[in-house]
Amino acid sequence: MESVEKKIAGIYIRVSTEDQAREGFSLGEQEEKLRQLCKYKDFEIYKIYKDAGISAKDMKNRPAFQEMLEDMKSGKLNYIVAYKLDRVTRSVRDLEVLISTLEQYHCYLICDRDDVNTSTANRSFLC
Image (tube, one colour):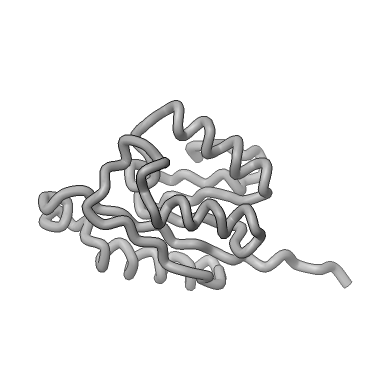
């Protein structure tokens, strides 16, 4: 009998300005949509990580994001689910580091609105 790896997700949500809340990017809206996505994909949700009022300029200065990475490194989750890639990072350099770290810890990134899924067979970044 084959063992099926559990899909355990950390949901990452972030807003940086009041404008985003008005444009449908509120923490609550992101969380609801991502909970629905996890249910659809049969992911167990480990935790919701929220950074409110924080820029995606860099990954270091986001407490919830850093906590999520530590949980990933300790094996508590194997999927990071975000609404859009710009919720995770706006830096190409940080994205490159993140993808490398995810690969090292056998974790996958899924960004719902941007069709980002690093768990696909060819590990394509944009499908």
